[in-house]
Length: 499
Image (cartoon, rainbow, N blue to C red):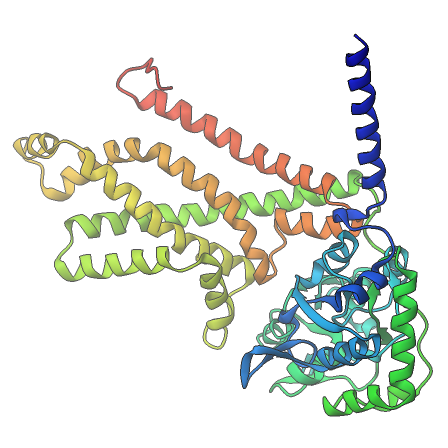
């Protein structure tokens, strides 16, 4: 008995020690504080950024794609040298840089990270290394001359930026992007009315495009900073000291001049910390629920429209592959292999951006067409398999009744094939429902995109994630039940065990 009590006490002590050890760690299992000492001990400072931001921030060197270049690469090289360590880059999605920093996935974040009051509440912000301006781009000839003129307009911005904070507090429709070039492509083709982005981005990707005019006045100003976790004030102090030294001895100016970024703004007083009234609530309440329901309706409408396109095209492809002439069978097989063999995400990009100079499809139109054409290839194989599974006697019986080939196909074979294909069709529709999340890359705010927006706004992924999962289930489960009822009704045996 005494041994059992001793073992219980030892187990309790072990659990307590584990809890204390975990309590001394930050999110992601990273110990709180002491990061500067660990950086110097290992001789490496790990910094997170997103290469998708492109030139001149962080991007692959055209002369050597294995090497990173950009003005922020140079800033980090100089900063690491002054700390006596080496820099190491890790790739992370830009929208998730702050959450990933808080998790402890890297030591610091630097990637056009704007200093705002919201970010200051979550992480420590370094002294600025660049002063930027918000530049408003419009189509040449547009009457828009200021943010006030954008009422009721569609305005393109990058997600999780100060520009997004500005426009979502205005009576405009924000159109969210993840890349820096796509907003100006859509502006040139009339899909949006204006683009509000940092002057670095506007100067390189928008202002030099034909048909686009960048307004000369700064819509707002802000600064780029390096993000550090709240529990690392000693690391922040070292980074601030290094930035101040780079500014004092001229190294920071030389880096900015090298990338043609030095301008009069860099010598002017640092603008105050930016703040914009948030339009989204800070808790998952009724307003958020309505936004999620609206996004769910977008997802459902998009999926239904795409599947209504995929079913007849897939049926025609299946018929052509089985009963068509040799050229038709070759073309049909080529279609199926191309659309099945390439990612639907790539197909969406090609339809929306690749065809833009010839046919400027709207986001919803491109999404329906892209998903519909992609799933038509899968449906074709489902229907082909169902047609080939029918006994040959069905065709022979129809011929003995005097039916021609098309009559046999229409009245005898297709009804039975569709009954056989019903379970696979249901599965494909559920898969299409989930694949619709990919259309956010062409600015459609569907259910998954709404979840990511809410997760960042609410600073938590649990409630938005659960709400998103519940709505996906609510959309897909009734369809599964409907399919089961149809299968039961169409089955020869009205009480099959499998159902």
